[in-house]
Length: 631
Image 1 (spheres, helix red, strand yellow):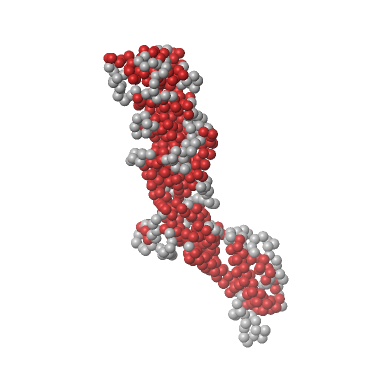
Image 2 (cartoon, helix red, strand yellow):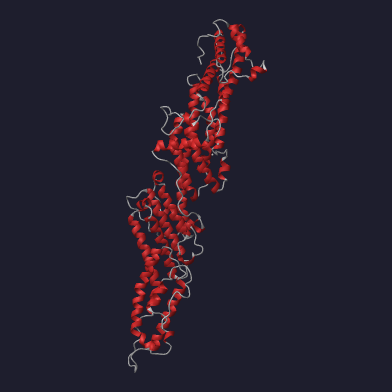
């Protein structure tokens, strides 16, 4: 439609009366019929064009223009000014009706698809939620819908030159409706009704944004309400928020700015007023959720979702700068940047608290069979997941851990004792994040040693340490990122520790059993017999049988969960036990078999021992027929 300064073709110049009659004919306060009909109804446009030209004619007749927002009246132009007031009321109704009835509809699924497209365009690849690692907290290791928000999928256009590649603007209203809205806004602002125009605009579009928010699952929650949510519920809301935030910033808010510019740009409306009044409340609501998370209680299970939240806002910040433009202290951009900073601090704080929790997790009851402790699984799954977030954490974790600063007065005791000696390697080429991961493992080792002391059987204590340190090594080797950050030097040191524990276990169990197979004391001098003390020999066989029976009965219930480690341990035992027993049996068997009831003393053949060893470390009682008896 024509501009407000165009020639009045339908109303001849100077024909002020005809213009005023045109205005009065559409006076909605004087005629119910006029109130029900709309000029800009998408049908015959000639009447709407005549009406706008009438408004232009009357405005030209007023020699003293009215001031914006506060029209001044003069006695010589009261009729014209009265007509202008009536015209402004009509145009305000028309403006509102266009906004409410001509808005395009779009399904939320389309918004999600567009959001995925924008992310792929911006980063070169899809950006999905990072998956959780196996395991989690447990035991001692527990330490947003579519209506009037924009066009159809066929109405997508490329963003303006100022936009980032990730922004996807959509047409919220058809082009002809936008032209009509701009024509009306031009007249209202020129006549001094700019504030009313902006209020009507913001009210209609704000409602559309609210509908979109509801359908995307963006809830209006206070900081307190967010912080009182159980973690499972909060975690689900964070996932929905991340999806919604990308859609809201890159599509909804960006499209609202584009619509505002198409209607109001160059018309003298100051300071982004239409756009600001439309979306500021929604934007504050959107980022208020992230703010509540950033200042909430810190706990280890929240770390990875908070990193997801941090990465989302970091990724969106350039788009926020483009869409909201202003970087004043009260701007949405500044709010988002401050939230990002607080999230970064929360991440550093949670990591530190996790380290302390690992170090101080109290010994309670020993895990049955010396198997892998829940704390070990939890901690190693946790730091494996930390390595998946390496790009972010490398940027955020910039200081190395200080072992001495980790111990409080409670840890040192009333006497001010020195902190426990922890083997904390600090290679020069290690990143601060890598140093923190090593520190966590060092703290875990220290804790496991305390838990190992809960076992009354020294051999089981060593088996427990072997299982747990072996699991740590296995998890580090299974993650290239984690192995790189930990470093091969420390990995070799860990490998040596679990092998040492395996050796210590074997000494604690099998030295006393092998001791039964010694020759000392069996040969006697000056005897009229063969020089063999049969009574001593019988006692040695009986002692061996009793010791092996006890080890078999007990250690079949002990558990080595890693099949390869379990088999290696059995082989190592066999290589020591079977040759020694075979030799002992070969030398002295005849002396027992020549006597009475040899079966009471020689209970096992070498093959029987080998079969019995296969029961060890299975975590269950051996079956009655699991070994053969020899005679």
